[in-house]
Amino acid sequence: MLIQHMCSAYSDQRLYRELCYSLSNTIPEAEQRVFVPVRKQSLVGKNLPALESISVEQRFVLRPHHRIFFRNKISIVYDELISSNNFLEVDLVHSHFLFSDGAVALKLFQNFGTPFITAVRNTDVNAFFRYRPDLKSVAFDVLDKAAAVVCLNQPYRSALLEIVPSSLRKSIEHKTYVIPNGVEQSWLDNSFSTAKKLEARPFQCIYVGDLSNNKN
Image (cartoon, rainbow, N blue to C red; front, side, top):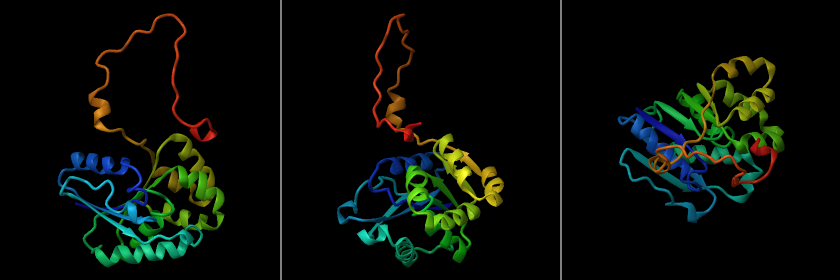
């Protein structure tokens, strides 16, 4: 099985490399290719995997103006992607973001018939849908054609289903799943073997993150 990942944030975070590692453990026979369009040359070569079954191609093709000219960005990324890969061999495309990666996956589906799944993340719900209403039709087309849709939590799923047109809501709802981000295996390997019993007294907790509605 050959899986093509479209992951525009792969070079920025180790999360996506760990996801590919976990997928390799789950489906050992799968071959994975990751295509990563980046905005800085310094991001090329970051987070490269140590497994032969996973190949990563990072291309410095994005420029500052692509933040505004979305469709031009998608065309450039698509052309770069197909110039180096044979998509008649790909069994599944995994789009890690609804807008930036999903639009490319949609073009692959339209031109090669390659099935794809797409994730819906924070920037999709709280940035693109909010500040780029001109691109909603692109997102709705991606959601409509995707074989499955993955939301990282239930609030994202609820927000997404409120945004999509009523004519698409039922079909999208039936193929939308909540699957949170995973954690590195080292956190699980070093977890407490037995629960600590809390004394009947006030205790302190630490929260690491921003205090915003975004954190629900």
